[in-house]
Length: 173
Image 1 (cartoon, rainbow, N blue to C red):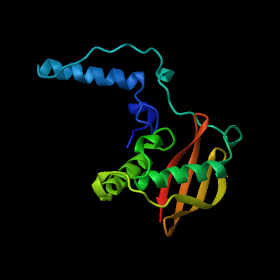
Image 2: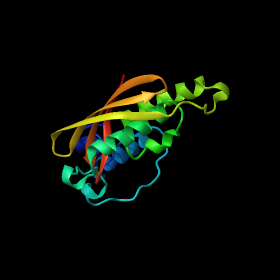
Image 3: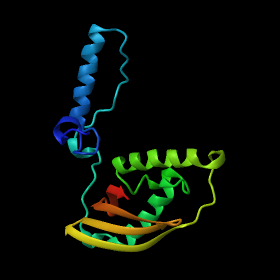
Image 4: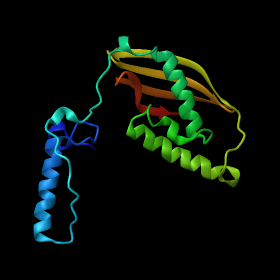
């Protein structure tokens, strides 16, 4: 997990700030003086701690309809998880935690397909989407999907970030 903003960058993002970068370089230089096996590549100096990009929260008014968006992203997530769609298509729309879960499930699904390739499967269909908005810039969606002959439930937590919805949590039943 990422550390608080003051220690290693923007809270929860893993992005380093200039102060944390300077501290890391200082530690590496001390290690270099004691052990000649360490290699340090020189870095550019960044004057302002806020110069590195951190995700910016976005209010609900500046975002697309969460119900429509949740239905579309649920459809894409299920296609990725079942091996029908490439994993990289999720990169911009999900958090790193959701991406890791989808990557594991995608790898298992692809290995199970005959010849380790794509198999013709019945298309995934979104049957119903219900959304509640517990706070500004946050939406929680319950999605019912048809996966072949199985009806499945998916729960998504969407957070407005940098002018778009990002899936921060996903549960699939």
